[in-house]
Image (cartoon, rainbow, N blue to C red; front, side):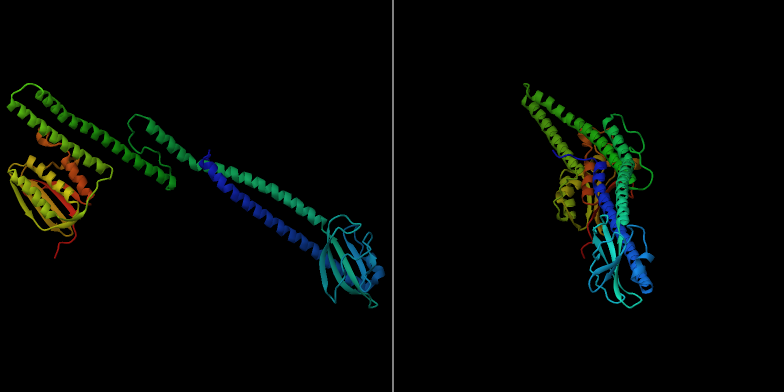
Length: 459
């Protein structure tokens, strides 16, 4: 089974290998640099020593050279070699009987090399400097000076140990600091998580103000808290709307269903044919009303899920308006119509529903006449539906597009509609990137104005 590490553990797992790699690289760099410095120091000492021996040989000769350059035991190895035979003619005490290296030098040249584990000497490496020298009588000799590097090796080893201990300590310190820093950085996240869990597990209504505490500053955590507060607000409003919608829908559905049940019970009784026909007609009307209500609810549900499907095509909006107003005229409704040719990219069935709902709303609230106008204004199509009834109170002009809203409580559900018609108008118009407003005509009539993007009018 795959184990999922926490965020803190994942951060440590990502940072610690990088810290180890950097520490190892720094330790290696320090080791190489220190080794080069110590080796260069030993080479400088050996070179200076051999040059000093050369100067001493030119003055004192071979017999006095070793005596005048006495050194503490084991700190130097001096050899004077006869270059033709390779014989060691003088050396410090305990020095090997054979040359430290092959003595091949010319003129004032100084050669420097290294050897390992000389016979009779303590184990370790030596830096050897070789130079040609001449005694007072003009005889050439080869001078060899061996400088042990045991002290440098010991210092390098101790430095390496100290570096390793320091690296381990540094890694432990960085791990602790990283753990503490990550914990401090995640503390606001933990608080937000606790607050969200308390909100989701509590049945109490939310308190006023932001649901989550917003950390100080303008960093990522503050923006996360603000975004989550906006999300919780939207969820709260959506939940409240959903609860209200479900309650209203249940209430609206219960009425026609109860009426249909009563009418069916009456049809089951022995009644005269004319009365049975009347009851059947009323039941059929209730079924039609119920079908309209269900269709409206499905339309609004698809809008809530952002799933309203628009079958867009080139639509002559003036033809749609004329068709809908013509249907109402056929029922004897007095409608005054004035339209201009308007073509736009839209769903003709949805726009027909918009016009029909506005006309039915106007019919319910008119006194004598309904007036419909369609015109181009710039790059917009403007549809106005007026009725000569009183205009909507400015305080209710936003609320009127809500669901199950009936501003006239005196109307029954049978004559006042479902309270969903204007809500559907608002949703369909918004899906077409348009706007709808409840306003007032210049004559003081009730007006609904729809604006839809249509492009410039045809030339």
